[in-house]
Image (cartoon, rainbow, N blue to C red):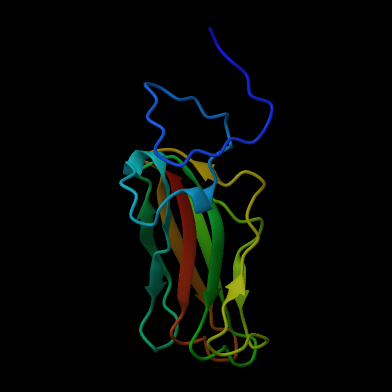
Length: 162
């Protein structure tokens, strides 16, 4: 028969139960030892792949950035350049999942940007994904009458469960 104790309990020794049930959410981060041997499947993993072109004028390019190994969500996407564009030249950077953008609008790198300071893209309302989804970065430069940015770079942050 179960007993209920409606007060604090102090034990000056070990408690060795046959089984114990913890209410959901009752074990928080600080209760888990740094060296705890927890299965990877029970954890969330962050992946932050970075891609950067050479420090020359931006080149139109589509490149695979990440392949999902677990279900997850895109948390962030940023892009910038080592040297900003000059005049009316622009370069757009897009992050796509299976060929479809996950941004509300592409990131535009132009003369208004700052060298080596990434611009954050705005993610769509539901940037979640499943195992096997393929993410690619699409870079598209328009030279106009100016000079394209050089050393275009980007970084995405993916959070995967398990």
